[in-house]
Length: 240
Image (cartoon, rainbow, N blue to C red; front, side):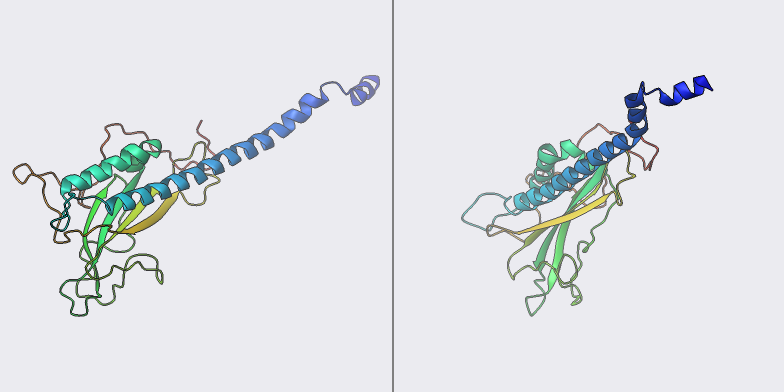
């Protein structure tokens, strides 16, 4: 009994005991905050990538004042490669995501001149995602196709102009665990009207004798050779 009473009154190592009890809760809160911050930063990077690609896509083409500016398959490849160099390397954009570029125009065969039409699309990325707002050729003779974007907020092209509509789909790669992440899929879009007079007839080949391979949307590839592993959905099975 004397030993029991002495142990009850002994306050040595109380701080260590309290720290041991509180450490799991503090660590969980700290790691959760770190994961939330990384998710927010990744959302920002994906959104900035979409804006950058749409802006650059609206500017590309041969610089000439004599004729409407044509664009080539090489221009499109350079555009996609530039996005990889500027933004993709930080988040492995083409490894864990996909970029879809659409040229939204008005159907030249439509008498009213207002029918929206996806003239062409170019894509890059391994992730198996498709456009949420239409595929190449949609809108041709289809009055139900009114533009690209969320319902009620569709982007429209004006007669004789084109809108570069870019969608980026990316699967978030958690630092620690996806237990705090409700949905790992990040989807964003951006659009810019083509800045200069552009030849909307087609995408040309810069050197027809040695044509560049178009980045069509039936291909799922990337520019880099490295293939970092996908972070699996683990919930509370943390990976450090």
